[in-house]
Length: 467
Ligand code: GLU
Image (cartoon, rainbow, N blue to C red; front, side, top):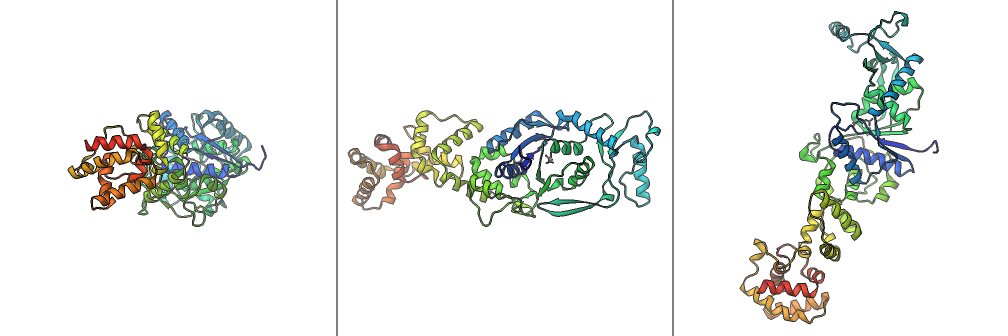
């Protein structure tokens, strides 16, 4: 492994589904690493035993899988690495960058009350910081970082710029609790260091943590990763993202029927831009993605944009890719898999179906004419167009279709001729034909349907409807 290799990671806490903000963080890390021949790692931050669940971990893995964000190596469990975290805390004790603090909760509270009464900072200042180890009692202790009290800590953030925090605003944070378990703040740093993470791209809700974490890097003499704290996602109205806005688990987007590549495109645009490009392929995103293009203000989630991109992606996807994603969509939503005949019909109809549909349910809706089996049951609206007169016209049409060459020009000629013979326009015939062929009022074009269905099926459906 070259020392210059870029290593990013996604480090979700498994306390719920993979939400849209997490998915975007994962995508940014994936794009950054994959676009540069680097590695993208996955670490599950499961140290909070009360809130972490295996179901949430599964949901995160499934979400990443659907989005196609593959990671290198094994999934790393932060909890499993507790011994290593403790080891580092002890190294800092030995090197004098950390100290044992024997203060009790009551003593800490008394310190804070007194500080508050005097109008001073309530950040705890432990009397054990400089105590002679000879004076240490035989009592439980926590390990605290001996943080600098003067000067400043500067986070050189690739998105936020230089963020300066006064060291007197940071306390001597606890690295190891009195039961010997590591704190989250220590664990993140040790893990990122051991995993060789070169770039930490994450939500800007972690910016404050970065200052404390950087002190641990400095105490250990480790290289600080490149920081990139990305603004959170807001709703289209600029308010905090809520369920109504789309703050859902990614699996719900899969269930709504968005193709994964459209979701990737949309998520990449949520907070990152490349000129005016809205629609792009994975290859383009991988080539273009950089930290410079990440905006400083919160991105706004907008379903309309997602729909729009989704429609554009469906239209250009290979037929096989559409079918494969459709299979996954049906499975994820608990629907029956496609029968081989339906699959064939869908495949034949794909050029017609792909355009104009924005999601898989819309595509399936368009495909009803192809997947339905005879006799076609017209829905309420389309049944109205199958009156006496139009049934008569359909009856007249069937023999003309029997021997016609099955191509668009001939079919157009026949239908226009028939309309003319009845002193009307083709448009008038379209509704009963849609009803007969698809049982619906809104369908792909009549000619497209006839060409996909073929002569026998078309004629049989027309006969059914005109009987
Ligand atoms: N586990 C944290 C979260 O889910 C992320 C920590 C990090 O990226 O450093 O918000």
